[in-house]
Image (cartoon, rainbow, N blue to C red):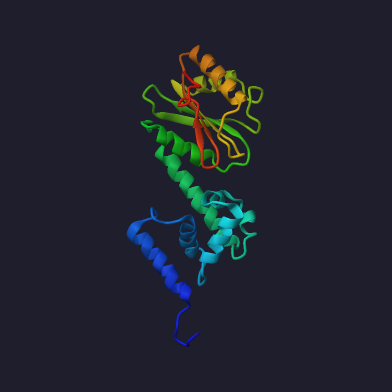
Length: 229
């Protein structure tokens, strides 16, 4: 390398930052997004090979951000600080999405709920069933994880869900549930539990607006698919 020349990666790092500054992330591919993120965590190094290695190891940008720090550090070039930085990005995204549907926020579109579902449950290693409590004006009164692990009518009864809704003084609820396997398709147990909750809640004048299941890069609305009347 000539005495006064700069490493080629310096120009690349600058170009990718300038690309983001001028046009945002809309035109970025996954590896470019990771490259950009890594420039803020790794100094004086070409981040492109590390970005590609992360994608090869985990399969997608979302999977990289959902990965455990110890798993991230198995990729050459990813140290403890870089792993923690990537986890911070995921945590900030979750907090932002939760703030978007914070207590007192009126739910106006299904997309708002879906973004919350993804932020709250995507990437979790075990199944969780969360309930969103709504007022008569469809503002969020609060949320509660009512079960984790194996989700069925034994693990969490419709009675428990309705009791929690009554305690929260909710006029309506939305069930939020993840499938760590990645397949968002509901099982028969999911459908049966939902319909049991609908019937039990109706006895107390509480509506069940939806049950949304989140998988890896996919979701399933029982309401949109005719499983809730």
